[in-house]
Image: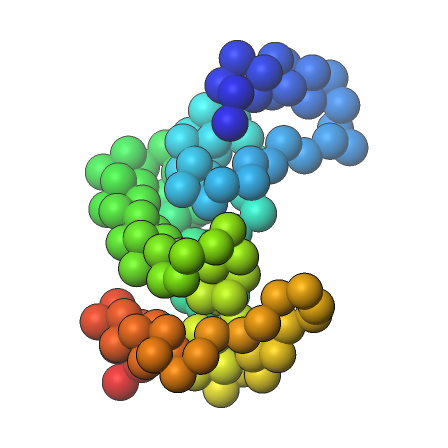
Length: 135
């Protein structure tokens, strides 16, 4: 994320009520909102929506202490789930696998991607359990 460009977008967005400035890497959402952004594209919110909503609200309220606490949890989730597997598709696979384990949807993926195999699924299960998302 190019922060100089981000700040320029924030300035332009002040003139355009119909614009939203969102960041792609969810690990940067807290900082973006604290600096005037409107949110992010947060894949992890599919797995733990309450965490991401609370982090957004804390950042929007400029509650730095709470934002830091929640951001640390977001970083823990991202570091736990998005690092399973060896390809760039690991983020998508991790989210889909996690959603499957939570009973929200199947983990079938569109070609050319393939869902995680049993060893990776078990790692995701263990990590979701450690995060408190699976009892």
